[in-house]
Length: 369
Image 1 (cartoon, one colour):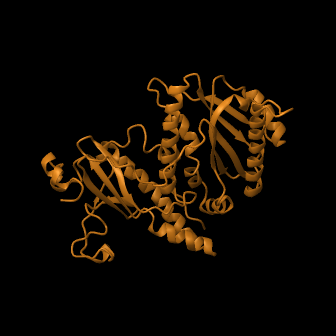
Image 2: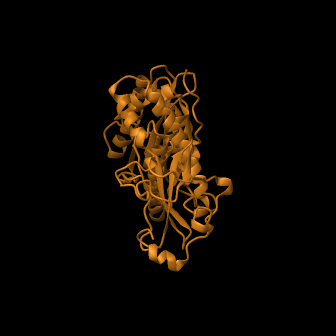
Image 3: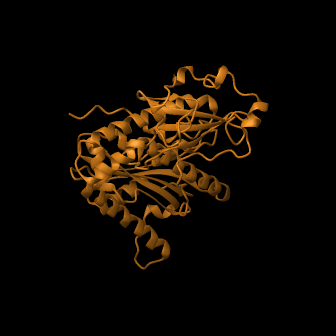
C-alpha cells in the first residue's frame, strides 16, 4: 500500500523568495516550508527503493543526499538572510525542495524582465491564459496532444505576424511576448494536461475567440480562461506570475506512483518556454541565493533530523576533532534545537541568545570566528 503523501502547499513554496521572505524574521517559516518539501522527497526516495530499474536507482542516489543540510547566512546589519550552501539533486519533477528553488529562480528572472518591459512599454498589460485539453488515461498521448495543439496555435501567430500568405489571424497575435509552462494533474478522472501562459498585450484578448480557435485546433477542447494580472496598489505582480512557475511543485500533489510515472514520461521534455519580449530570459542554474557581498554576516546551519530541519550551529563537515571527509554523526553527539515558525526570533539560535555585536561581526566577516 502506498504511503500517505505529505501535503505540500505549491503556491507558498513557489513564492518563498519573494514579497519580503528573505527577511530574517521569516526564516522560521521558510525553514518549515523546506522541511515539508523535503519530507515529501524522503517519501519519494523510500518509495523508489521498492521500484525496479536503473532509473529508480539513480533517482534514489540523488534524493539520498539532497537537502540533508542547509547553510544560511544572516546579514544582520540589514536584516536579510540568504541560503548560502546546500546539496540539491535537481530532480525537480520528483523533489519538491528542488522544485521550489527552481520555481523561485524562474519567477525571479521573469519578474525582473517584466519590470524592464513595463518601464519601456507601459501600454502592455500581463494576462494569464490557461489552455486545457480533455482528460485521458494515457499521459504521454494527452501531453503530446496538448503540445502539438499549442505548437499549431503558436505557428499561426508567427506566420500571421511574419506576413505569410493566407495565414489566419489568431487572438494570440495580440501578444507581444509570453512565457508558459505545461502542468499535469490527475485527480482520479484521468490525466489533465494544461498550459498556463502569461502574455503581454496592449489590448485585452477575447476569451470567446480564443476558445473557438482552440476547439478548432484540438478537436476536443474549448475550455480556455484568460484574465488580467494586476499588481494592486503595491504594484507586486508576483502572485499572478506564480501560477505559471509553480508547475514543477504541483507534481507533489500526485500520488507517489503517479508522480514517478509522470517524471518518466516527461523526462527530457521542455516544460517551460517563452516567445517575443520574454524570449532569452536566463534562469540561474544555481539553486542557492545570491550573497550580499561586503556585508558582515552570521552563519546558521541546519540538519534534517526527525522529519524537520533543526538548528545545529555548525557546519556538518566541521565538527570538532572530526576530519572533513568523515561523517560528523559518527563523532561526539550534538545538542539540537528545533526551529519552529511560532517561536522563531532573530536571536534564539545565536550563542548566548544574543546577536553578535557589530565589532564581533567585523571579525567574522568572510569567515567564522
